[in-house]
Length: 249
Image (cartoon, rainbow, N blue to C red; front, side, top):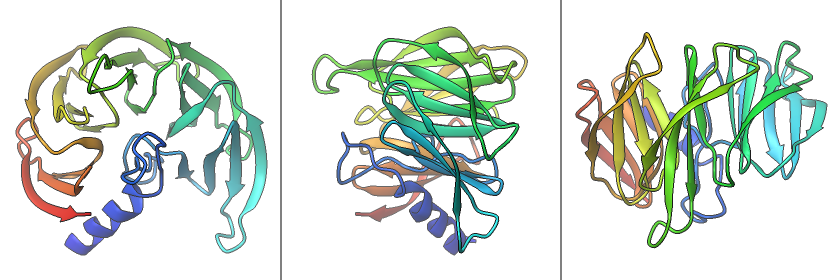
């Protein structure tokens, strides 16, 4: 089990790469049939792979994994950075909003709608009828800042922005049951409790860590990508993560 977790961590956390983080990188995203972080530019969903190639969303069939075949390419408005697939909808985080593509035909994503905001960076995760997205701007050492935004995605193809919660300088995020973990760079991890019956998200606590950029909740573990390597936290008590292992760069 431990070996599997470590392989999962390496495979997921080092696929993607954000130009701002350079040598550290940001990680792969949730695909609907696996566990990973929120900041991917390439994911698998069913028998297909989706990836961002500059301003193009490409779809590859993996029916024969040894011989992938491209089935579509779609021009993306704005600068696309992250992908997240959930219940036949593909959410594309861009610097101008979250774009939504219909995956009823997984071989041919079809653009549906988006939730606009000012230019920033947009990881997104979805659970139930709600989506959670982070935006950040500026320099975390100076005038930077950011928000955690809550979206109503009960209509998967027409997300509605409900409200935003100010954050220090947010990057990736992850959900485990009723808890939401937001990675805030050098400011550590903000923990929120999600009300399962409405859109309410309540701040619980902040834990100090090395600069942290993304996380993967996996059963009772929270695998975090940090500036110094990979940190593995025990979240059997979800609101009180405990660092149990670290793999240094």
